[in-house]
Length: 261
Image (tube, rainbow, N blue to C red; front, side, top):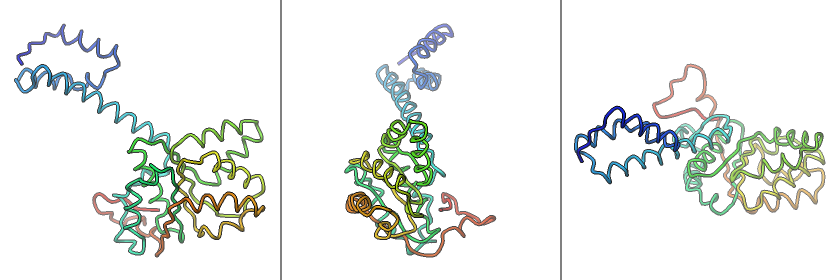
């Protein structure tokens, strides 16, 4: 493919690409024109690689939008978790969860264990994998969710707030079951989890799921909510010493690793 592109031709093409919102093509146009001029690309190849450039740009932008919407506390990844520093953490089970079969089935994941073993890191890493797979996700502290819904009752925006929390394919509730719930809080949780039937939750907790029941003031609500949630979830007990010393100031983190929480 022999190509001689004048400045006028290039300017007109660039203007057309901008009008069509094909800036992924525009960003690589000069490089692709150079390849074509060097005989490395035929006519069809030239068009194909330009289209692929645009597809790649849109996929990257979509991923970044989903990551922003997730509002992760940290952009944790499984690649960044040092399993060698946490030998009692069930690495095989976590890597199995990384296959995201639970997401495809609309199931939930419960990560529980002592403080500091890396539950929040692993939870956010799994949600991050879901985002990379094309799913929407949202990270929130459970206390923030309860306060958010309570505020909706006060200003009559409860339905809208509930819909916002129902929308993502994955809702990550960090620090679940930290303290006893009031009756309105228990009701709000019940409504949230009921509305999200068929969609995935990721919960982290310092308490075992069996210990959540006494936190609810109404045993009937507790049984109805938790029996459904616990029996349709993948439960992962994360044991061992605190992982947080790995985050100590001045600690040298090996290349490719990040500290956990």
